[in-house]
Amino acid sequence: HLTNKIMNKKRNIKPGTGIATILLIFVVLAMTIMAALSYVRTWQDDQSLQREYAYKQAYYKADAKAKYICDEIMQLKDVEEISTQNQVDIQFKENIYSFQIKIRSNQVLEVQMDQDGNILEWMTKMKEEM
Image 1 (cartoon, rainbow, N blue to C red):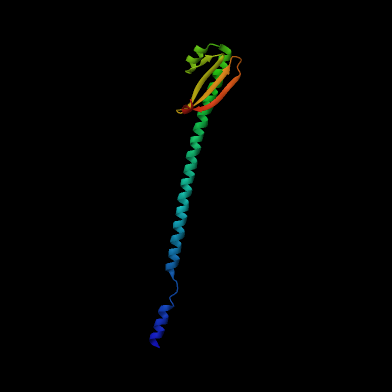
Image 2: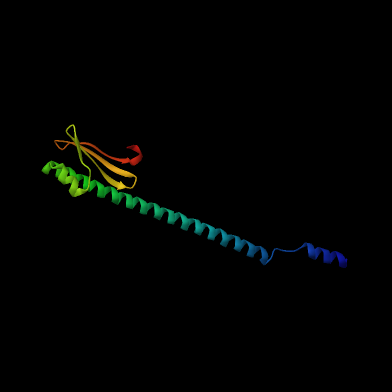
């Protein structure tokens, strides 16, 4: 009987602190991974917003410059002087003024306007498209 009691005690091992510790480590590890992924996602969103802000700022600057040049053309009609002042190549062919304003290194705002000041084209284009 004595050996049977010893055998039964060995078989009746109850889960102790070891399982709780392993479970705690797993939970902490999972939360750490989720926090790291959340941080990376937030950083990527921030980078994306900064790029978008920089692009919009560059576009609106080019847009304002193009409007200013159109107004100058309608008031002065001196294309050479306006070209020199604004460092933009303004061309006049077949009663149409056309010029391009750089937005980014690979993108421009292309503008075409007739002699009456009507805008015929106001479009962003990639340099590969031209």
